[in-house]
Image (cartoon, rainbow, N blue to C red; front, side, top):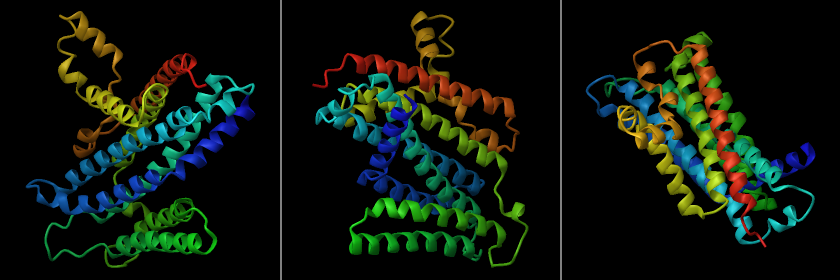
Length: 322
């Protein structure tokens, strides 16, 4: 069973990152991260706090779209094209098949989230220019844009000369280059002066907040895959969006009514509460985030993802694929 699971997961991972929509969402997310630096400059308060909120929101929306589109690409289309029969007709159970799809999908989403996080990391390093006379963070600009340009140029030439996948090459080359860009940006100041590495790192709370957003993506991926066993791309996206919005406002809508309404109590207990993972207020107010809270959030995310996958297996078992 581990061999079958690994084979399905590996094939799903490669299939996911080769989808054109995967590259489109990644590029769009990185562009939005850059635009956030300018948009955050219109607040009358601390612009860098708004930049953090915009960046984390962009990471969350990027994860939502990638999870929805990728889940339907690796499962719904296989069901509609009946290519899934080549796997489930062999001695591979549908539960193993769905679990392998989730592992491969989660691996692809982890790679995408890491790349988007590096873009967020660099924008936080640059910060918002409070005045027009403030200097730009030249190492961030040079290393960040340089890594993206080099990756796209090499991927484009390789695609033209050998016909290799553009997105795949750009990912394999761009990931280490962006990582190197983030590291180097911590070693140099705004005007190329050397500085201690720890001085260049953003606040630890920002890194924790980004990690908790990824925990939300873990849950959304499981929900998207479960929905993809029955519905198409648009409905999967709408279901994930509805669950995300309901989970973000459940404390405001259903928590106060849970003691007086059975329906509100049932909705509040059965909806995933994404407020646990949104700790921007704590980050902006420089409040510590305890390690046990992070551990509980991780456990909650994986338990909820597991419950969504169990529901997906139940739906998939009765799905006609022939």
